[in-house]
Image 1: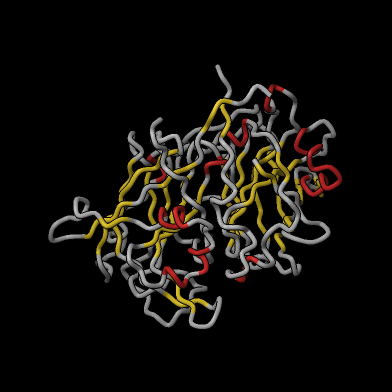
Image 2 (image 1 turned 90 degrees about the horizontal axis):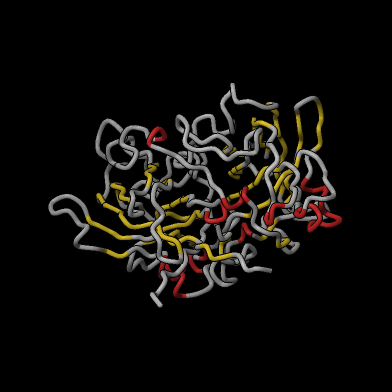
Length: 178
Length: 232
């Protein structure tokens, strides 16, 4: 058996990443003319004391409206977005409602967006998913049990959604282990 | 086609999200257990990029301004692999760091050290077909932080890498061999095992060093690898 190299451990993103991880139009996951329903997803990120976290980076990755994953395109990749929380702890993602993607084993999944969260005070990223509507058949929402509602965004107006991320406490967001 | 998924990460690889020695983790780690779910197509894919993401001197941080930055010029090179030993080609690596005096080009950094008008401190590069990358930059300085009395971060470069699955996504830090601050640094020492800590320390390499120009360091990054999905 050939020796395999050891895995690299994670370290915190720290507070000073914005220059190095700058991304043009990072909050836009798709070009303006991409097919599908264009939506805005916004929310705040809070810590265990309820304090707003203003130095986080949140990456989003999703399928397009047809359920396909994109490839390189003009300085980014459709379906990928990188948002920084502002001093009010708020992120805002501009995207397209994702199409259906088959689950492991071919089963159905509700349309979802993968979320990868980094910040100072976090030694590794945490993952979760955000759903635009509840679906009792979805395997991840089922696994989340009574806390599944922390993964579902609220539609506040036509094509506008709100979804907060809570690190600790009674409304702690479900984080996922893949 | 046999289905692949990523092998589970050993529990003692990454620092615990709750690591009291690094105080800021206290209010920023999930208190409830993570919920284990299967890996699906969204997680097993990742954004892919090409050279349209490059800006001028994207891989040479000493040439991004009008003049040359102060500090010790270095070349950092290595490979991005998965744990099976396979190279990960054409994946995006991003690098950021403070200047040689220990100050970041960032409005929130108030360390009493000078900014360098000729150093911004960010770079990006795609790995080549063999998974190799190379950056030219300057050696970052150590700097103080407020985690505890007389706390100093050892010199480090921040690296971000994507891989071919969002589950390989990694942000880490590269340290320098022989740095006396390593033993005192809570962030470095949150990595549970000595073997994994040692892998975050680059190796000085005379064959990478360019005569009359720059010292060379080697730093490989190893991401989760795939295995066949068990039948059940």
